[in-house]
Image (cartoon, rainbow, N blue to C red; front, side):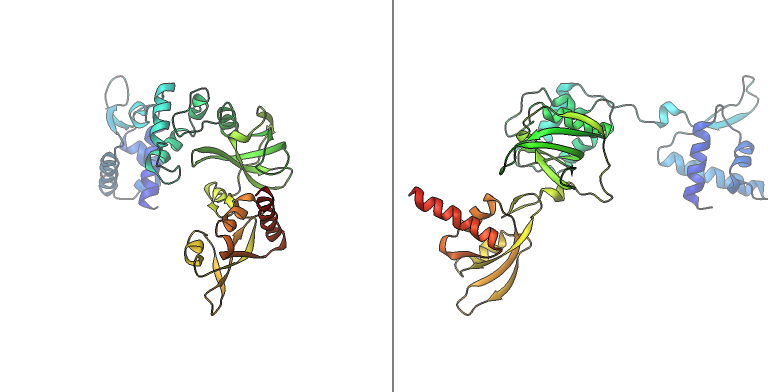
Amino acid sequence: MHPLERLLNLVALLLNARRPLTFEEIRRVIPAYRQGDGAAAKRMFERDKETLKEIGVPIDLAPTDAWEVEQGYRIPKDRYYLPEVEFTPDEVWALFVAAHAPGHEWEGDEAAVAFQKLSTGTDTNVLAAMAERTPAPGIDASGPHLGAIADALARRRAIRFRYKPTQGKPGQRDVDPFALVFRSGNWYLVGSDRSRGEIRSFRLSRLASPVKDVGPAEPPPEGFDAAGHLQSGPWGLGRPAERARVALSPKVAWWALAGAPGATVTRAGRDGWVEADLPASETGAFAAWVMQFGPDARVLSPRSIRRQVEARLEALAGAG
């Protein structure tokens, strides 16, 4: 038996025993102590006991019966288990503000990660406790939706709401919620959009209706990375939908590509112009990114994105 398994068995036995157990009783239950040499078995037990004490496991010696004839070992539950941690609404709010102070990002920051852990697996969802608070400067608590979605996540419930996207018409969404992510001053829900059959992100401030419970939700896929679905780049926020080929002049190529994660140079001309393949999307964000370079950038493909940039340029020319 591996020493770690032996230690775990000993902890489980002494923690669940109704009364203190003598070494002979422990020896009968745990096979590792049943070796022929009783003295060697007792020495092994004493070493294990000291190891557990060194890592903070309390093992007491107490009478096995009311007459105190024999002494036995036990682990008192009140000293083994950590007490429940409870926070008042004001304390929760203070933790949240500290974790999301301006200049800090949700992922990776120690305070934010600590707050995220505190908000998971508690009897009272701490995100729900914030729902009615007034937002602190630089923090978007997303009105009444944050608490409702946090509650749905905790209870693994699917939700329905009306959503206003940045482009297109508002519509109803049925979502299996996977995670809440705080990014750049806003809360986002990441989950499986049932009607589209894919994982999407939803900015909570764009919800146009109350959140409705529509039954049990599917769990996130194994290895799911919520933050990965909120990447940012020239395509905007979220996972890039496609790739585009863009030509860039030598004046802007070096710093344009530095701000485009996942870009690769596919061709370099003698005149210094380069062609690059980079993540893109049919959004205003990507069109605006290309247009900021003026005549030093041209979309070569796909045609849909090139047309979108041309349409925006024509609209600007007409407005002038």
